[in-house]
Length: 592
Figure 1 (cartoon, one colour):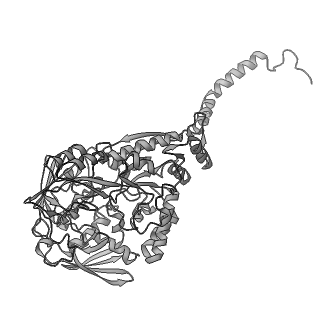
Figure 2 (figure 1 turned 60 degrees about the horizontal axis):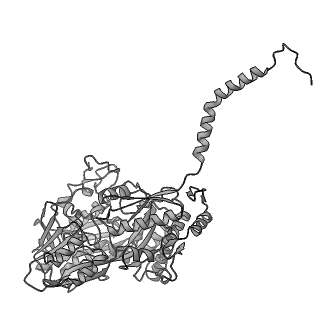
Figure 3 (figure 1 turned 180 degrees about the vertical axis):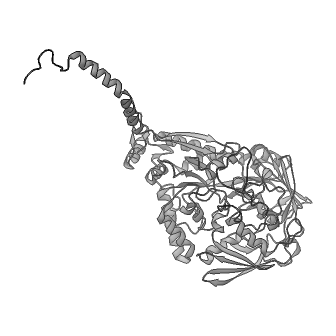
C-alpha cells in the first residue's frame, strides 16, 4: 500500500482528533435524543392506585383496599390507597373514569340477570354512570348479554351461567362478598324489624306498633339523604335508598315476587314487537296535590332515555336505571290511567323489570332538562339539571312525603294521607304492607359514627340504626336492654373494579392473575369479622348461580396464590411470568 508523502493533504493525528471532537460535539444532541428514546422504551414498574371511601363513610371498603394493597405489594405490584369522599369518588370513577382500581359496595340488588347488561355491555363503555364504569368491551360477552334478554327458561339459565363464568375468567371486576347488615332496634315501640330496610326501606311499612309511638326515629352515619333526594343521582343513592318511600313505581318486588304498586294490573297486548298495557290505580296524586296520570309514566321513560328531552345536541341518559330504561322503545299514554309500553327485542320476563322504575312528576322534572353548570366543578361530561339537582323538597307519590330537613342533620318525612294504601280497601299488595306505615312520621338523624348511632338506640333516643353498623358493635347491641340485634344478608355485594382502559388492566390475563391474589375467605374474617358471605358472582344466593360457582372454602372457584391469607411471592411471580410479564432485580413487576 502506497503511503502519502509528507506535505500531502492527508489526515494528521491532530486534525483527526480535532475532527473527532467536532463530530462528537455536532452529534451530542442526537446521542441525547437516542438515550432518551432508549430510556423511554425501558419497561416501567407496574403500579396501581386503589380509590375508595374514607373510613367514616365506609369502614369495610377502606379495610378491603388495605388488604388488596398488601396482596398486590407481595406480588411485586406497587399499590397506593386514595380515600376520597363519596361525591369526588363517584365523579372520578363513574363520570371521568379516572382510576385504576376502586373498591365499594354495589348500589343495589341483582334482582334479575339483566342487571349484567348495563354493567358489562360495550355499548356503555364510554358512558358515565354505574353502567359499565370499567370500560369493558368484548363481543362475545355482548352477544351473551343480548341473548339472555330474549331467552326464557333453561336457555336463559344456561346463557346466564356462561355470562358468570366469563365474568370470572376475564375479571373486569371482582365480586368479593355479601355483607351481613347488623342493626340495633328497640322493641318497646315497634316490632317486625327483620328485613325492614332490605332490600328497600319500603319494607318499613311492615312494622307493627307496640306502643302509642307516632314517630319512628332512625339514626344514620350517612349524611347524603340530608343533602340530596334526587332518585336519579347514583352518587347519593345506595342500598336501602330512602327515596323508595317518596316515589312509587308501577310495581314492587317483595320477597322475589312482583306485585302491582302504582299500577293495578298489566296485560301483554303484543309479541312482535313486545307490548304491555298498564292500568294505573284510580285517583293517584302527587304530594303537591296534582293528579298522577299515564302522561307522567310516559314522560318518565322519555326522561330516563334522554334527560335533555332532545334539547341538546347529544342525548344525556340517566346514570341510574340505564339498563332498565334501555328496554323501552316507546311509552304512550292512551288515556289518564292507561299507558302502552313497547319494548325492544327482549322476553316478557326481562321486560317486567321496567315496572320497578320510579315514576316522576312531569310538571316538576320537565323544567330540569337544561344543560347543567356546576360552579367551580368540572364534571367532565355534558349533563343536565335533572342529574345534578338536589331535589329538595322532593315531590313524589310514595307512602311518605317530605316535611323538612334541618341544618343537614335531620330529615323528616310524614305519612301521605292520599296514598292508595290509605284510600283503597283492596290494593293487591302483600298483606304485610297493605295497611301502610304504622307511624305518622319518620325522622332520620345524622350522627357521626356507627357507635354513636348504637348509643342513641341503647339510650332510648332512637328506635333503629337505619344503616348497618360494624361487627365490633354486635356484642354491645346484644347486651343492651330493650334492644334487639337484627342481622340481614345484604343483596348489595362488595367488589373491586378495574379500569380496563388503562394498561396493564387492559389485559385480561393480567386481571385474571390479579384475581388470584385475593383470598375472599380471609377478607370475610379480617374485614367483616365473619359477618359476610364470600362470593364470586353478583347472583350468589340465587337460583341463577350454577352449582360449580358456589363458594367452597376447600375448593374456591379462583385459586389463591398463597395460603392462610398470605400471598406466596414465588407463586405470584411464576403466575405473572406465565401471563407474559417480567420482574426487575428488585422483584418489581414490569409493564409488558
